[in-house]
Length: 233
Image (cartoon, rainbow, N blue to C red):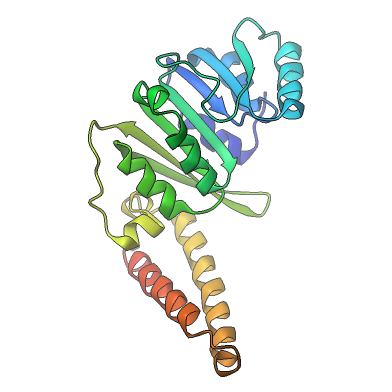
């Protein structure tokens, strides 16, 4: 199984020897990749839709891995029993959905040691929710895949809520700045350019549409983003 750049980034964050549940597994590419390399002791492929899960079953069968990967129709974590797995992968979905999935089954989450999350949006809310639920963010990665930017987070059970970061850090992270990651720097520069253009357009029509509150919100985002960019050497 050859993975896309995005899926490879996610797979590389999975700890070796874990018991994994891939929540929203889609076509099952990451479970197949991990099973082929004997990287996990147990793999469950979960999806809320029968269509993608059927595709995952076909790919798993074609790879000869039906004895290594179990497929389940599941709404988030609802198809899991407490203690079945110690690692969750939730990728390719909106950030608010990721947060709801993490909240929905506290008995299952209690037995989880590692989270690998690749939300498509709302990174601030995902970082906050992750730490509020007692996980510390240990690593972040980003990639550019087919012209689109993606960010992934790995967090481990810390036993207590962290919640000690600044608003700027929750919005834009801190680990990739500490790494001085040039790819993430490019991503942030692109985000700054987009925000600046939106702000200029709103300022031009401010009087007509009374968009003052949105202008203040965008300006705050730009100010926080400038703080983040200043950390790159």
